Length: 341
Image 1 (cartoon, rainbow, N blue to C red):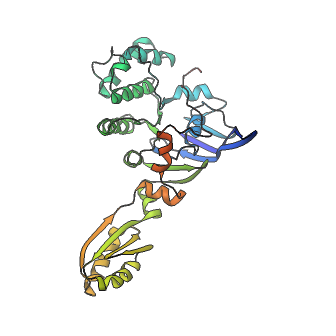
Image 2 (tube, rainbow, N blue to C red):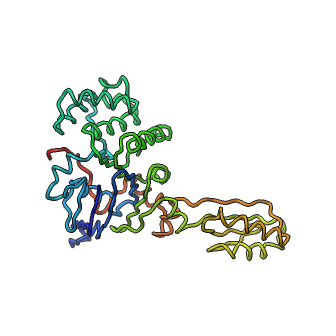
Image 3 (cartoon, one colour):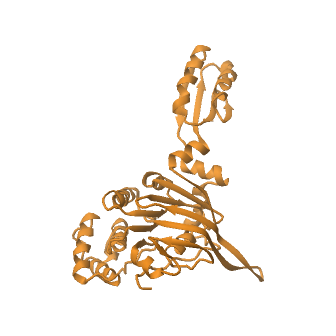
Protein backbone atom coordinates (compact mmCIF):
# COMPACT_ATOMS: atom_id res chain seq x y z
CA UNK A 1 0.00 0.00 0.00
CA UNK A 2 2.93 2.34 0.76
CA UNK A 3 6.44 1.64 -0.53
CA UNK A 4 9.26 4.18 -0.31
CA UNK A 5 12.95 3.88 -1.11
CA UNK A 6 15.66 6.39 -0.38
CA UNK A 7 13.35 9.32 0.36
CA UNK A 8 15.32 12.51 0.94
CA UNK A 9 14.11 16.02 1.65
CA UNK A 10 16.49 18.94 2.02
CA UNK A 11 15.75 22.50 3.10
CA UNK A 12 17.78 25.68 3.07
CA UNK A 13 18.10 27.41 6.42
CA UNK A 14 20.22 30.17 7.87
CA UNK A 15 22.98 29.76 10.42
CA UNK A 16 24.07 33.28 11.14
CA UNK A 17 24.73 34.93 7.79
CA UNK A 18 25.22 31.68 5.93
CA UNK A 19 22.64 29.50 4.19
CA UNK A 20 23.12 25.81 4.88
CA UNK A 21 21.38 22.74 3.55
CA UNK A 22 19.58 20.57 6.11
CA UNK A 23 18.52 17.00 5.34
CA UNK A 24 15.19 16.82 7.16
CA UNK A 25 14.63 13.32 5.75
CA UNK A 26 17.76 11.35 5.00
CA UNK A 27 17.17 8.20 2.98
CA UNK A 28 13.91 6.77 4.37
CA UNK A 29 12.85 3.28 3.30
CA UNK A 30 9.44 2.09 4.48
CA UNK A 31 6.72 -0.39 3.57
CA UNK A 32 3.13 -0.50 4.77
CA UNK A 33 1.02 -3.46 3.70
CA UNK A 34 -2.70 -3.46 2.96
CA UNK A 35 -4.81 -3.58 6.12
CA UNK A 36 -2.01 -2.53 8.50
CA UNK A 37 -2.27 0.16 11.13
CA UNK A 38 1.19 1.70 11.44
CA UNK A 39 2.17 4.16 14.15
CA UNK A 40 4.85 6.63 13.02
CA UNK A 41 6.75 8.09 15.97
CA UNK A 42 9.47 10.68 16.21
CA UNK A 43 10.43 13.76 18.19
CA UNK A 44 9.92 17.31 17.05
CA UNK A 45 12.12 17.98 14.01
CA UNK A 46 12.95 14.30 13.37
CA UNK A 47 11.45 14.28 9.86
CA UNK A 48 8.07 12.77 10.77
CA UNK A 49 5.87 15.51 9.32
CA UNK A 50 8.13 16.00 6.29
CA UNK A 51 7.90 12.27 5.47
CA UNK A 52 4.11 12.39 5.82
CA UNK A 53 3.92 15.41 3.51
CA UNK A 54 5.96 13.64 0.84
CA UNK A 55 3.77 10.52 1.03
CA UNK A 56 0.60 12.64 0.70
CA UNK A 57 2.05 14.62 -2.28
CA UNK A 58 2.19 17.91 -0.38
CA UNK A 59 5.97 18.03 -0.76
CA UNK A 60 8.04 16.79 -3.69
CA UNK A 61 10.93 14.52 -2.61
CA UNK A 62 14.40 15.88 -3.21
CA UNK A 63 15.56 12.33 -3.91
CA UNK A 64 14.11 8.83 -3.82
CA UNK A 65 10.84 7.23 -4.89
CA UNK A 66 7.53 6.36 -3.28
CA UNK A 67 4.32 4.71 -4.39
CA UNK A 68 1.12 5.20 -2.40
CA UNK A 69 -2.00 3.12 -3.15
CA UNK A 70 -0.17 1.92 -6.26
CA UNK A 71 0.62 5.38 -7.65
CA UNK A 72 3.88 7.29 -7.87
CA UNK A 73 3.77 10.33 -5.56
CA UNK A 74 5.52 12.54 -8.14
CA UNK A 75 4.30 11.29 -11.52
CA UNK A 76 0.77 10.36 -10.44
CA UNK A 77 0.12 12.79 -7.61
CA UNK A 78 -3.53 13.41 -8.51
CA UNK A 79 -4.25 9.68 -8.48
CA UNK A 80 -2.60 9.44 -5.06
CA UNK A 81 -4.78 12.24 -3.72
CA UNK A 82 -7.95 10.66 -5.07
CA UNK A 83 -7.05 7.35 -3.41
CA UNK A 84 -6.17 8.49 0.11
CA UNK A 85 -7.91 10.08 3.04
CA UNK A 86 -5.92 12.71 4.92
CA UNK A 87 -6.76 14.17 8.31
CA UNK A 88 -4.32 16.92 9.19
CA UNK A 89 -3.42 17.97 12.70
CA UNK A 90 -4.94 21.41 12.05
CA UNK A 91 -8.23 20.01 10.74
CA UNK A 92 -9.96 20.92 7.52
CA UNK A 93 -13.46 22.12 8.42
CA UNK A 94 -14.34 25.82 8.19
CA UNK A 95 -15.53 26.98 11.61
CA UNK A 96 -18.51 28.99 10.33
CA UNK A 97 -19.88 26.58 7.70
CA UNK A 98 -22.46 23.94 8.54
CA UNK A 99 -20.82 20.57 9.05
CA UNK A 100 -23.00 18.75 6.53
CA UNK A 101 -22.32 21.33 3.83
CA UNK A 102 -18.57 21.04 4.41
CA UNK A 103 -18.71 17.24 4.13
CA UNK A 104 -20.80 17.30 0.93
CA UNK A 105 -18.57 19.93 -0.70
CA UNK A 106 -15.50 17.90 0.22
CA UNK A 107 -17.00 14.77 -1.34
CA UNK A 108 -17.88 16.62 -4.53
CA UNK A 109 -14.25 17.75 -4.84
CA UNK A 110 -13.42 14.05 -5.19
CA UNK A 111 -15.95 13.59 -7.99
CA UNK A 112 -18.80 12.21 -5.89
CA UNK A 113 -22.28 13.45 -6.76
CA UNK A 114 -24.09 15.66 -4.28
CA UNK A 115 -26.62 12.89 -3.63
CA UNK A 116 -23.90 10.30 -2.99
CA UNK A 117 -21.95 12.66 -0.74
CA UNK A 118 -25.08 13.50 1.27
CA UNK A 119 -26.06 9.85 1.75
CA UNK A 120 -22.55 8.80 2.61
CA UNK A 121 -22.08 11.80 4.90
CA UNK A 122 -25.16 10.92 6.94
CA UNK A 123 -23.96 7.31 7.24
CA UNK A 124 -20.56 8.45 8.50
CA UNK A 125 -22.16 10.88 10.96
CA UNK A 126 -24.03 7.95 12.48
CA UNK A 127 -20.99 5.67 12.51
CA UNK A 128 -18.79 8.33 14.13
CA UNK A 129 -21.29 9.40 16.80
CA UNK A 130 -22.26 12.72 15.23
CA UNK A 131 -26.07 12.31 15.00
CA UNK A 132 -28.01 15.57 14.93
CA UNK A 133 -24.94 17.66 14.14
CA UNK A 134 -25.40 17.90 10.37
CA UNK A 135 -26.50 21.53 10.53
CA UNK A 136 -24.22 22.56 13.36
CA UNK A 137 -21.05 24.57 12.69
CA UNK A 138 -17.65 23.28 13.92
CA UNK A 139 -17.30 26.25 16.28
CA UNK A 140 -20.37 24.91 18.11
CA UNK A 141 -18.85 21.44 18.55
CA UNK A 142 -16.64 19.95 21.25
CA UNK A 143 -13.03 19.07 20.48
CA UNK A 144 -13.86 15.38 20.09
CA UNK A 145 -16.78 16.12 17.76
CA UNK A 146 -14.60 18.35 15.57
CA UNK A 147 -11.93 15.67 15.26
CA UNK A 148 -14.57 13.08 14.30
CA UNK A 149 -15.89 15.56 11.72
CA UNK A 150 -12.35 15.83 10.31
CA UNK A 151 -12.28 12.03 9.99
CA UNK A 152 -15.67 12.07 8.21
CA UNK A 153 -14.23 14.51 5.69
CA UNK A 154 -11.21 12.26 5.23
CA UNK A 155 -13.44 9.22 4.60
CA UNK A 156 -16.20 10.75 2.48
CA UNK A 157 -14.75 9.38 -0.79
CA UNK A 158 -14.25 5.87 0.71
CA UNK A 159 -10.42 5.70 0.59
CA UNK A 160 -8.60 2.43 1.21
CA UNK A 161 -5.65 4.27 2.81
CA UNK A 162 -6.05 6.90 5.55
CA UNK A 163 -3.34 9.22 6.88
CA UNK A 164 -4.05 10.56 10.37
CA UNK A 165 -1.69 13.30 11.54
CA UNK A 166 -1.85 13.68 15.35
CA UNK A 167 -5.60 12.91 15.36
CA UNK A 168 -6.17 13.29 19.13
CA UNK A 169 -3.96 16.27 19.95
CA UNK A 170 -5.67 18.56 22.44
CA UNK A 171 -8.50 16.17 23.34
CA UNK A 172 -9.39 15.21 26.89
CA UNK A 173 -8.80 11.56 27.93
CA UNK A 174 -12.42 10.52 27.43
CA UNK A 175 -12.60 12.06 23.95
CA UNK A 176 -9.26 10.45 23.05
CA UNK A 177 -10.44 6.99 24.15
CA UNK A 178 -13.66 7.45 22.17
CA UNK A 179 -11.76 8.44 19.05
CA UNK A 180 -9.44 5.43 19.47
CA UNK A 181 -12.45 3.16 19.02
CA UNK A 182 -13.37 4.89 15.78
CA UNK A 183 -9.80 4.69 14.47
CA UNK A 184 -9.68 0.97 15.28
CA UNK A 185 -12.96 0.55 13.40
CA UNK A 186 -11.39 1.98 10.23
CA UNK A 187 -9.48 -1.26 9.83
CA UNK A 188 -11.82 -3.63 11.67
CA UNK A 189 -15.05 -2.58 9.99
CA UNK A 190 -13.90 -0.89 6.79
CA UNK A 191 -10.69 -2.79 5.96
CA UNK A 192 -8.74 0.46 5.64
CA UNK A 193 -4.98 0.81 5.92
CA UNK A 194 -4.06 3.49 8.48
CA UNK A 195 -0.83 5.49 8.71
CA UNK A 196 -0.91 7.26 12.06
CA UNK A 197 1.48 9.91 13.37
CA UNK A 198 1.24 10.63 17.08
CA UNK A 199 3.30 11.66 20.08
CA UNK A 200 0.97 9.87 22.49
CA UNK A 201 2.79 6.65 23.23
CA UNK A 202 -0.21 4.88 24.71
CA UNK A 203 -2.14 5.73 21.54
CA UNK A 204 0.49 4.16 19.30
CA UNK A 205 0.67 1.15 21.63
CA UNK A 206 -3.07 0.49 21.58
CA UNK A 207 -3.85 1.19 17.92
CA UNK A 208 -0.82 0.10 15.91
CA UNK A 209 0.03 -3.30 14.47
CA UNK A 210 3.55 -2.00 13.93
CA UNK A 211 5.61 0.94 15.18
CA UNK A 212 8.10 2.90 13.08
CA UNK A 213 10.46 5.31 14.83
CA UNK A 214 12.19 8.08 12.91
CA UNK A 215 15.04 10.16 14.32
CA UNK A 216 17.36 12.61 12.58
CA UNK A 217 15.64 11.87 9.28
CA UNK A 218 16.15 8.09 9.37
CA UNK A 219 13.99 5.12 10.32
CA UNK A 220 15.77 3.62 13.33
CA UNK A 221 13.25 0.91 14.30
CA UNK A 222 10.28 -0.90 12.79
CA UNK A 223 8.51 -3.75 14.60
CA UNK A 224 5.54 -4.59 16.76
CA UNK A 225 5.29 -2.72 20.04
CA UNK A 226 5.79 -5.89 22.06
CA UNK A 227 8.88 -6.94 20.12
CA UNK A 228 10.45 -3.50 20.44
CA UNK A 229 9.88 -3.50 24.18
CA UNK A 230 11.17 -7.03 24.67
CA UNK A 231 14.23 -6.67 22.47
CA UNK A 232 15.40 -3.24 23.56
CA UNK A 233 14.31 -2.63 27.12
CA UNK A 234 13.22 -5.83 28.83
CA UNK A 235 11.01 -5.90 31.93
CA UNK A 236 12.21 -4.24 35.12
CA UNK A 237 12.21 -6.66 38.07
CA UNK A 238 12.32 -5.01 41.50
CA UNK A 239 13.11 -7.25 44.49
CA UNK A 240 12.68 -5.90 48.02
CA UNK A 241 14.81 -8.14 50.26
CA UNK A 242 13.62 -8.61 53.87
CA UNK A 243 17.09 -9.19 55.36
CA UNK A 244 19.60 -6.52 54.32
CA UNK A 245 22.48 -8.97 54.83
CA UNK A 246 21.09 -11.08 51.95
CA UNK A 247 20.87 -8.23 49.42
CA UNK A 248 24.19 -9.23 47.83
CA UNK A 249 22.99 -12.83 47.42
CA UNK A 250 19.70 -11.66 45.91
CA UNK A 251 21.62 -9.41 43.53
CA UNK A 252 23.74 -12.36 42.39
CA UNK A 253 20.61 -14.42 41.71
CA UNK A 254 18.92 -11.62 39.75
CA UNK A 255 22.12 -10.86 37.88
CA UNK A 256 22.06 -14.38 36.39
CA UNK A 257 18.97 -13.47 34.31
CA UNK A 258 19.22 -9.67 34.06
CA UNK A 259 20.95 -7.48 31.47
CA UNK A 260 21.63 -4.71 33.99
CA UNK A 261 21.57 -4.43 37.76
CA UNK A 262 21.00 -1.70 40.35
CA UNK A 263 21.13 -2.03 44.15
CA UNK A 264 19.53 0.57 46.42
CA UNK A 265 19.02 -0.21 50.11
CA UNK A 266 16.86 -3.32 50.38
CA UNK A 267 15.95 -3.10 46.68
CA UNK A 268 17.64 -4.96 43.84
CA UNK A 269 16.48 -4.03 40.34
CA UNK A 270 17.37 -5.40 36.93
CA UNK A 271 16.17 -5.46 33.32
CA UNK A 272 15.07 -8.97 32.38
CA UNK A 273 14.03 -9.91 28.82
CA UNK A 274 10.55 -11.49 28.92
CA UNK A 275 10.50 -11.63 32.71
CA UNK A 276 7.27 -13.64 32.78
CA UNK A 277 9.26 -16.69 31.69
CA UNK A 278 12.30 -16.06 33.91
CA UNK A 279 10.83 -14.89 37.23
CA UNK A 280 9.33 -18.25 38.37
CA UNK A 281 12.79 -19.83 38.21
CA UNK A 282 14.29 -16.85 40.04
CA UNK A 283 11.74 -17.21 42.85
CA UNK A 284 12.50 -20.91 43.18
CA UNK A 285 16.23 -20.13 43.45
CA UNK A 286 15.65 -17.44 46.10
CA UNK A 287 13.46 -19.83 48.10
CA UNK A 288 16.05 -22.62 47.82
CA UNK A 289 18.78 -20.38 49.22
CA UNK A 290 16.56 -19.04 52.02
CA UNK A 291 16.22 -15.45 50.79
CA UNK A 292 12.94 -13.88 51.93
CA UNK A 293 11.36 -11.07 49.95
CA UNK A 294 9.13 -8.32 51.26
CA UNK A 295 7.85 -7.75 47.73
CA UNK A 296 8.54 -8.33 44.05
CA UNK A 297 7.33 -6.06 41.27
CA UNK A 298 7.61 -6.52 37.52
CA UNK A 299 7.22 -3.40 35.39
CA UNK A 300 6.63 -3.86 31.68
CA UNK A 301 8.68 -1.50 29.51
CA UNK A 302 6.97 1.34 27.68
CA UNK A 303 7.50 2.75 24.23
CA UNK A 304 9.18 5.71 25.90
CA UNK A 305 11.73 3.26 27.36
CA UNK A 306 12.30 1.99 23.83
CA UNK A 307 12.74 5.50 22.47
CA UNK A 308 15.09 6.45 25.31
CA UNK A 309 17.22 3.38 24.62
CA UNK A 310 17.38 4.04 20.87
CA UNK A 311 17.94 7.79 20.88
CA UNK A 312 19.19 8.67 24.35
CA UNK A 313 16.20 10.92 25.00
CA UNK A 314 12.59 10.56 26.04
CA UNK A 315 9.96 11.04 23.37
CA UNK A 316 7.80 12.89 25.90
CA UNK A 317 10.65 15.29 26.67
CA UNK A 318 11.42 15.72 22.98
CA UNK A 319 7.79 16.58 22.23
CA UNK A 320 7.49 19.04 25.12
CA UNK A 321 9.10 21.77 23.05
CA UNK A 322 6.63 21.23 20.23
CA UNK A 323 3.63 21.44 22.56
CA UNK A 324 4.94 24.64 24.15
CA UNK A 325 5.08 26.29 20.74
CA UNK A 326 8.80 25.92 20.09
CA UNK A 327 9.26 25.98 16.31
CA UNK A 328 10.83 23.16 14.36
CA UNK A 329 13.97 24.04 12.49
CA UNK A 330 13.28 22.14 9.29
CA UNK A 331 9.68 20.92 9.24
CA UNK A 332 7.05 22.94 7.39
CA UNK A 333 3.37 23.39 8.15
CA UNK A 334 1.04 20.85 6.51
CA UNK A 335 -1.32 21.87 3.75
CA UNK A 336 -4.76 20.63 2.78
CA UNK A 337 -4.96 17.65 0.44
CA UNK A 338 -7.49 18.05 -2.35
CA UNK A 339 -8.24 15.54 -5.08
CA UNK A 340 -7.41 17.85 -7.97
CA UNK A 341 -4.69 20.03 -6.48
